[in-house]
Image 1 (tube, one colour):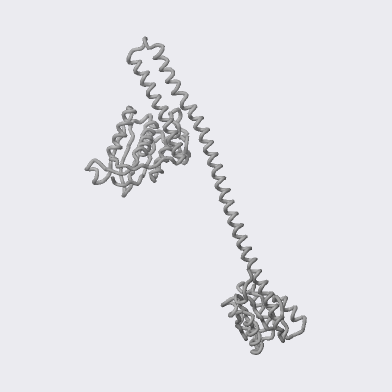
Image 2 (image 1 turned 90 degrees about the vertical axis):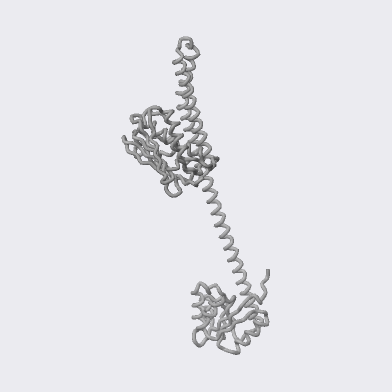
Length: 401
């Protein structure tokens, strides 16, 4: 689209009033906006305040030559792109070449020929407009290129993360298969053995022995179901399909029930349950909003681990306290402890202490605990010493019921 003359501003610099009048009239009649200046020292100020589209600059100025003014204009990033046309009465080719070398785009010889003047002005303004258009298009292309590069980089990062995630998932699947093969073989063999004995030698067994074999089968089945539940829990957590469902819960009653339930399963150990909820302890109940299922996973796993890894000590401590709007659970034992080198990876899948020996376990329990704590937006930490025991601390935000 062609730009109208009225959209261009021309700065005319000449100390001769007659020349200024002639140029002002000719350019104004052609439709251009004209600003005039008689002193070279004021040109930079004029040009900087409001950038003109073209400058007509007389070489012979009383205070500062046109050459010096042109040098100042081209040295300033703000004004260096303004096209400058020298006006001169000189016929000396050397001066014309000097002006062009300083950055001027053209020259006009005095006295002015109106048609020549307008033709040169029109031509250079057209070039100026084309240059601006090209600069804008070039900037747009640069921005498009940068945007495309950013998108490519983002997409590459996403694909890289997806591939890494897929790699992790495949590794996890492989480890699940290995674990399942190892963990299921022994219990299935136990079930097969006990059921075979009951089937083939039932008439030779006392009622007590029959009951023992049945209990063995039932306990082994519970163990297999627990492993499957753990695997399912991990799978749901990885797929982000677990939602926290808060409900009113008497936390004291809940913890006492878990203590008694676990003590019933592990008759060789005692759990010392201690409550410190301040003044509210006297009411013997404390209603909070929590996810019962996730909280059960956390406490049950930590208590059963404390018992499992304390084969030579029959006492496990379990405390419930609160600070501000957070519940604090502490489970401590006097067992084998966890090597310091193993502690950093303890909440990862299939990670167990290097000192567990033949003690059974899948290495999933603590990773499940960590997932449940994270879902509750809580924190879990541990302190452990080899041969002296371990303390797990879980801090979970809560709302009163």
